[in-house]
Length: 430
Ligand code: BGC
Image 1 (tube, rainbow, N blue to C red):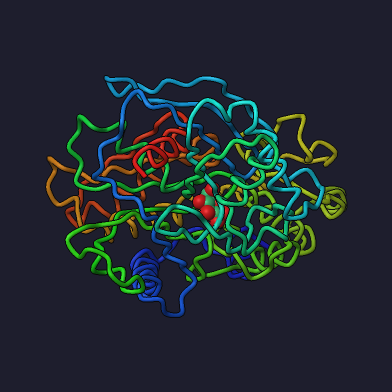
Image 2: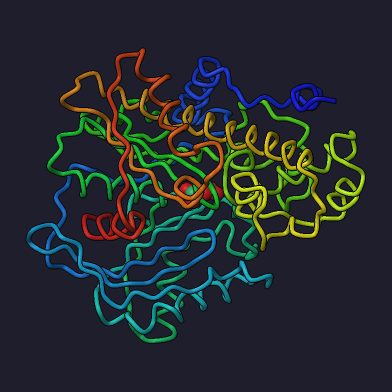
């Protein structure tokens, strides 16, 4: 069986129907803003990007991502330059194989905050999980993603939970302002790109998980009553949960092995926590379908887990050593087959990422004037570090192909430590 035939048999296509995907994104985004049935939560961030950022005021920043929890004290000097002190990086509580209770989770975070808690009155908390935000920037965790194990925190207010735990521990009361990492990334792009007159901003993350934020006109956010129709607000789309992309047998196989089957389907197709798992499902199906030599098929069927990094490294260099494919006795023909399969998987991820970003740029309603493009700030290891399939440039090519013919102008930018900078901005302007 040829690779193409194998992929078709398992309903896998690296190419996408961009027009159909964009229409479905748009339909589900509308439904989410109206409070209707949709896979897109469309969470209002209660952040007004037009507010000026105070300078020379310190803010403590907490950045809870998929793998790490970072703590620092930040401020912007008179020239808008970011100053950082006391930066510390810890493993994200609940990702080390231990299952944390509600209290334990908040206590762990308070422990890490305690050493810097005297340094500023407030905390900007970049919390990279689906979280409903209140107008005062507290946040109720809707569900965990990225396989974090702290089930008791679901449904709890994370900002006030941390405030209370810290107060109990140190007697110090801090205001904790919660925002999503895509919202923080969007804000970081705005503060970095102040000299370029962009018409709108998008924040896209492709790391352990994936998601996007953009700016929506308040009169379109029908599910929230009483918003000023003359203003706009950042919306956290929670696009990792999008269910409108066609799934293959390999996606179904990976999904069945996760703690949250049926949830986060888009994220499971494109983000760092999962691509390796989809790749392993693909290789094991290829082994069963006779695409690989017998000894290789036997070895592949014994592999228990494949990280995205190991898979990407192999597809980019099939003679690489040091990953979980080391024990497989590949022939050169097997190597060619695995490369072709992996390439197809990374190409699909790049195409889907381009569709996701395009959907947000289109929703912004801006970018028609080349003088004022839409600023797309991108963050995340999977986007910048994936070597296979010319990943990053393929996403950019996809964006040009989708948005160019529609007469839309955009720019993609990178801001160092965007989630922390954005959390500082949100914490200071709140
Ligand atoms: C979370 C989002 C987050 C994204 C990127 C997803 O798993 O649901 O809230 O923005 O990962 O970190």
